[in-house]
Length: 254
Image 1 (cartoon, rainbow, N blue to C red):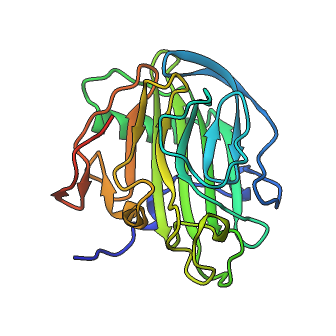
Image 2: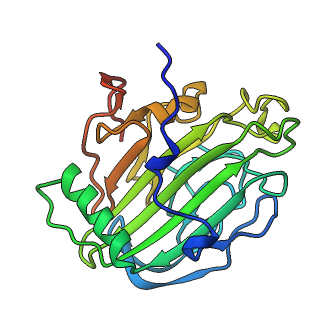
């Protein structure tokens, strides 16, 4: 059975009205290195800077221009989160936004969400980064109406860190240079979603990654909210059971 896409309202507020910065209109580009106000712990390592990459990745230490995704774990030591690692080309359509924030209203909303999903973990957010890929299309697209919207929210209490991945309308999986069809953005090597620690041991592939079914990620979840995946990442733990709407799908792999 097919379900309608997750609502755009699932995403946290974003855009220039929220004070967001925009990435350059550049195929395989990235933000400048962002010095963050509060250190963010990812897989036991404290990071003080990051990059928001056009190709659907938030990375620590180095930008990620690679457009065809490899399966996790990666052998080259790059630590990053991939809400939707694929060949985004924002020079053809869409925007990549980001901001770091200590806005009390947003932090309160994030804290409430985390406390709902993980009531056993004491958490009160003091800093967040919101990165949003808004109606972005793929490399060599022949149909600019085929676009994706998705978001990563990184937040920390100084001791505990979480990452939330939110999915709006997902219409394509693959750029043409990765074997995708120019009119549909389907086929070839589809997007990789999940986390890579950089140590070749700790990683997580969201079910469906690098398969055609990743097109349906807006209908799946590990917190029973279709289109939303949430993980504790300071000392990474895979929690929750992945679901498609209310139906259990494949087992978690780590």
